[in-house]
Amino acid sequence: MANYKDIIANCKDTKGGIIEAYHALQSEFNYISREALQEAARVFGIAESEAYGVATFYSYLSVEPRGKYIIRMCESAPCHVAGADELLKAIEAQLGIKAGETTPDGKFTLELTECVGQCQATPVITINSEPLFNVKPNMLGQILAACK
Image (cartoon, rainbow, N blue to C red; front, side, top):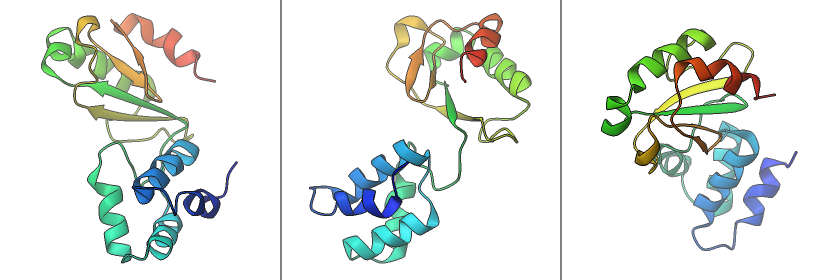
């Protein structure tokens, strides 16, 4: 596992470096820790409040710890019409959490998102940014079991 300081240092001289660093941190740790925010502020020469503001501006980025598997449920109109509400309720029931929460074992985080650009195959969920199409509640057991 990479060190957050090394990740940030590697992006220092990159155009849009702080965003690149945040994406790399998110990819490695699934969130941006307070220590990483402080280090980014120091390396990029900005106030901690600015570093925090950048990190919280983008809905894809998180400054809160999240699960190993991040399930994002599309809540756009096409997914809604195709049964996203029932699917969301089934995911919540199966995981024992609500949207915006993480399972106690730290394995899953459930989030809501806007359109993921796959309206031809609704409802859609993503797991760690990989889309799954035409998902039905009866498919959840197999989908979640595949997350090891």
